[in-house]
Structures are given as C-alpha cells and as structure tokens.
Length: 463
Image 1: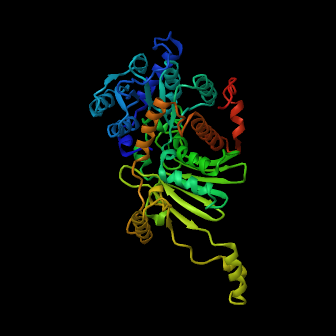
Image 2: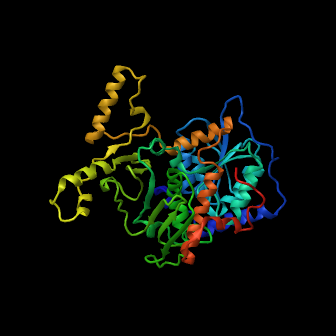
Image 3: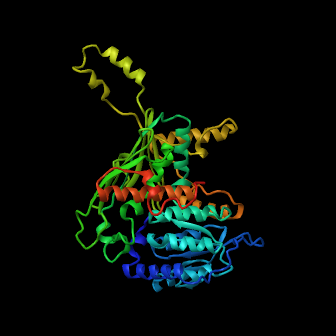
C-alpha cells in the first residue's frame, strides 16, 4: 500500500519518461542480458541474492522491511532518480551497488531475483526482461498495465514454470485475512452475498498531483490500480470466484490541476453467483464506517447470510483489525414475530432492533484446541475474555509485508507456488483494466472481453 514515505518521494513525470525510454530501448535493441539460465540460490549461505528495481516510495519501503528479515541479501539497487538511488544504497543494511539502468542489474550473474517497484506502466517490460534473464521476480501490483501485457506475461511465465513470479498483494499473507477465509470455508458466515470495500483519502490532492506520474493515465491506472486493486483481490478471494462484469462512475471533480486520472471512483463488480462488490475511493474525506469508526481510510466488510466480518490490514503504525458479527437467526426472529401479537403496527418493524456485539476474529494462537494443556487453555480463555471487553485486541505477530517477502525467498528456495502468484496477479490486473474501461465508457464491461483485447490470449492457457 502507498505510505507517507511514498507520497513524499513520488517519481515525477520526467523521471517516468526516463524509465519509459530505458524500457523502449530494451525492447528493440540487441539484448545484453545474462544467459537465460535460471538463477539458483547459493547453497553455501542459503541466502537469496536480490536486487530492487525502482527505489522510490514503495521500493524504499520494501528495503526498510528487508532490513528486518532474514533469507536474502540485497546486492544491487536501481533507479533513474539519483536521490532515490543514493538513499536506497545508504538505507539497505547490505550496502548494495547502485545502477541507473535496470538492464545492467539484470546482466549481473550474482543477482538471482529482482523486486520491481517501478511506476506501473513499466512493470511488464522490466518483468519480461527479468524473466528472460533467468531471474525470479516479485512485482508490485498491479502486475501489468495493458490488456496485451496480460496475454504476453501469461505465455512467457508459463514457459518458465521453474521461475517464481510473485505479485505484491500482501493481504494474501495476513493471518487475519487467512482466518477470515477459513471461517468462510467452515460456513461460519453462511453464503457470502456482498462485499463492501473502500479506500478514502483526504490527502490525495496534496500528493498525487502533477508532475507525479500517478496523476496521468499514460503512466498510471489511477485509484483503481494504486488502491482498489488490493481490495478487489480480497473480494475475489473471499467470494471464491472472479467477477462476471463491472460497472462504475469516476470523475475529476475536485482537483482541476491538469491531471487526467480520476480523483474519485465508485465501482460495482457482479460475480457469477450473484454476489457483488461495492467499492468506493474518494479524495475529500477519509472516514471509514467500520470498527465503530475507530479506523480511517481503508477496510473491507464481508457479508454473509449468517454473519459479517469487518477487516483491515495493518500498517507500520496500526495493527490489523478484524471483527465478527453474528447475523440474527431467522428462527428466533420468526418466534419473536409470533409473540409480538399486536404490539407493533407493522411486521416489517420486527426486523429492526439492537445489533449484536462485535466479536474478535481469533487467530490460531488464540484458539483453544484439544492438545492444549490446562494452563494453555486458561491463558487463551483469559485473552479471549480481555478481547471481548476491549482491554486487548488480537494482533498479528508479523506485518504481512514481511511475511510476503520471507515467503518469496522461501518460494525461490523450494519452488513452492506463491499465494499471490501469476494468475492472482493477472486476474487482479484484469479487474483494474476493465473497471477503468467501464468508467471511461459508461457501460457494463464483461470480464470475458479481455480475451479479445490487446491481441488475444497469444496462444497461452491459464495455469
């Protein structure tokens, strides 16, 4: 997710053009990349030698988190902005070498993997060249920018199944989100029918302004790509399928500063089973009507026939939070209706009333199981009591950002498929591209349309 650091050190349009130039040269010139043999982890240390390409706000954020985890060694960093590059070289605990041209990084034999945090519109060219150079890849969301890139990357990555390609969708690595999915699998929420998600910011007009690359459609997917992509992926995951179509409205209604990217969007995604995701991102208010409004900006509400979950990922300054609400039992409601007699004017009024208390979503470490000792059970019961009283809240032991980076290293070492893999990333990019199209054209856009856009599937099948 974008952070305060990313807002302050955003890449300008001029820098974005420089990156585009490098990508264009790489696409047309004779390649000088390393031999396309797959890079392997050095057995002596079992550390993954990696490079960070794009050291602006998000790239520098990842470097900070790499400093706190084991499993890898940063040997190179790359950026077209000299200040961003110098900062990255100085802030990494590994004191990597600095480069302005990413092709030089890909030519280094001791670089086994690359993390790509460039502006969105060059995600695909750099990812493509990294795969061709035999590198493992972690690419920030959205994975690709254009329809043709979806088909081309699917084909290229499927031709290299031994190379790891992971997408930066950290909610997939959150213990709270994983627990929510497990609750759904166990039927604790009944059938999921609706998801509400938002990312509201009151600061957008002060940060994503020209000449920031994020303000222009030529370089960015706007609010849909930078923010909504995380939460549309959550809806796909919790509903258990991909949307059938999307419709929505966007506008440039507040910031008349030369940008051509929307400053507010409202989207509805409809799923094959009738489920719907209602999404909102605005830039004039950061209120969040979840968790009793104790949090702001972003969060999701997962609604089922038997319960609801409010959930949001943590930040460096705030813990992840998840609350569970029971849905009143239809049988109890019917019994109450029979007892009311003439006490109310209309049966419809019986559906109103006081809601249930929020219950904490319990992580595995707080759940009592039969193998626990007496003392372990008592401690867990005590924590649960404190959670219900609001004295304590369940907390993840690690930031999902750290977990996703650690698991990237683990996937490289073992070949294990990432949770946010190629197909998760491409489906997410499809949702972003077609949602923007739906707003631009003012119509219902079906997800199947992507198969005929940008040259079609290019002969590749989904994994």
